[in-house]
Image 1 (cartoon, rainbow, N blue to C red):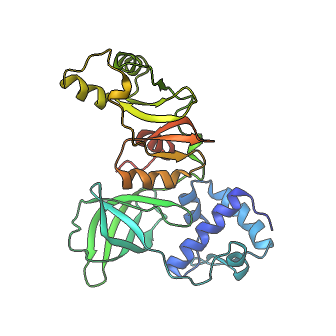
Image 2 (cartoon, one colour):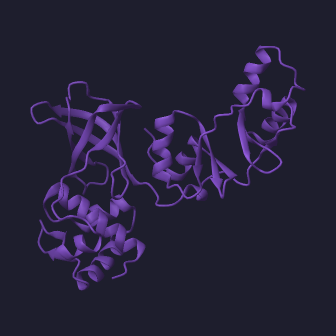
Length: 295
């Protein structure tokens, strides 16, 4: 059975929320997470019900729940253990703490959205006013940002006022990288790099040889360090470039490169296709692609 992209997003979100809450999920909850009109979600739910992938429960406490056919279609084990998801506090990734479960306690109010976050590890270091980011989750790449306003140490839960929820777009970085790429050749000098950076308002570019093979990377920081050491502007660019360049393939997904930025702690990657550099992706590019999550 073939599902449209929106039907797959709805079904994955429904399964994720249902396994978190073990209760019927309202269409409005799903619409808020995937940022779609509630009427659109309701219409798609009818199609999913007709296909036997979703069941509906009427009444004030009613909603939707996935059927066994939905789990089978998406190759998901029914009743699977909740995945552990990373959490950052005040901009710092907490390596010894993972999110086990998120339960939404309010969703129907126009200006309030609260959630209870169950974690593995101690909640003692969390304090009221802490800004947190949770995610991405492994299935639908959901991320949440909010502010802590309470905690329960006995239950290992943190109570959060949620500012935003967003799902990382399912698209390769080739859709958000800077391209066509600005490059230097091995004959370029430091002055060439400085001129290009000023004219193009960029801070780094790769160096290639005559066969379009990547040789290194030079940044504005490299130029400044060379200047402080008294290097001539006519010195070859190869004398200051970084020869250990970390690259990513153009087919790499956005969520993967976001994780790589955290792991490698650098500002940009050279994007490669068919063994040749085709673009640059920076942390700012990924933020623009996300468009939300201001914490």
